[in-house]
Image (cartoon, rainbow, N blue to C red; front, top):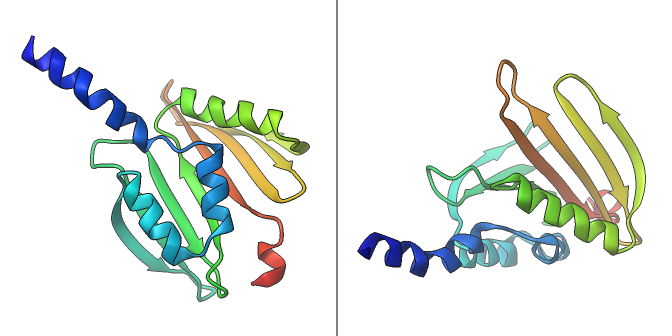
Length: 156
């Protein structure tokens, strides 16, 4: 009984790890310094930072060692970011997908292979790519969301 009460009390905090469309828009509209504090406030912890071949860096945050959710912010030269988000579960992925369908995004392109299915969307302000990835030899799937402001590439 104590375990059940403990899980019930923790349930609202477990949902904090799930980012939504508004969280992604916030991250896309802010520079890395503000985003770092925002992500930490959502319960994510710093995992690592890597410099890429083009001189930009990628900053990785995860919810926890046993969690499947991760946020990677590719920091461009002007400190703007391109967000890659791995949702905890399919439900979180679908909630974001439903939100973009309601907020004026237009489908740009869809691709499909034996490994993944991806759809790219664009609105007046943002670009988003939603992918469902099939693991080889497994029925398990992963989801990935790439999100950024449309003007980011021209300001790099």
